[in-house]
Image (tube, rainbow, N blue to C red):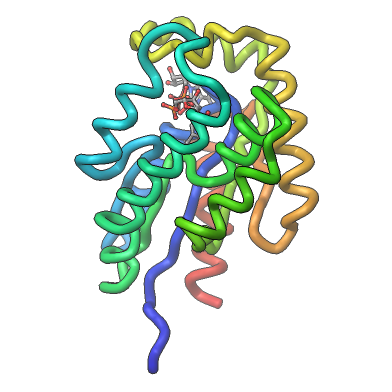
Length: 210
Ligand code: ADP
Ligand code: TYD
């Protein structure tokens, strides 16, 4: 049986680190090179997951317990993987997602609560796949928080948790990258967006050509 020719890429990092900007830039670059690209995001990326997203990103920061949040993120992710990610990979597309399971590992597993064991168990039970490549955009939380609040999108339930929370997230992503060196690459986000994009595109092309 031949392996699917698709490539699954995720962008991770603290809020406002530039993930969406970089995900878009990589999609454009690969489309320019003739690849089919599916650009998606979490929570969301399919109709059902987008409905669950609204429950997660709007309202009071204490609306859900950490355990309930983990269940909702996994419900959204399961739908996203079934309806969007797997079909695209099966037909050979490059799937670029703005966040995936590493966000749950760090937000719910480390920064909001110490529930990494539950996060890992649920992932193994109902998700079971990892990206081929993950880019963690590393940013000073103060700069990233200012960027996010300036955006004023209304989806600020998480950003309202403040600077200390973002610092815990940054450390969590750093530790995760150290523990998965074959999959996760740290990218310095404190550069012009075009420079970050060039760096990322080179790494992806090297993988696609290799
Ligand atoms: P995220 O998806 O990580 O929340 P965004 O890509 O939405 O981050 O970026 C947050 C804000 O910062 C946006 O207003 C975006 O235009 C801006 N931004 C993104 N990358 C850079 C960069 N390298 N330098 C300066 N501003 C940036
Ligand atoms: P997103 O819209 O990507 O936020 P931003 O653009 O600010 O980076 O994601 C919404 C929020 O959901 C964000 O604060 C991170 C959080 N989140 C988790 O806590 N756990 C998860 O598993 C995911 C995917 C996101």
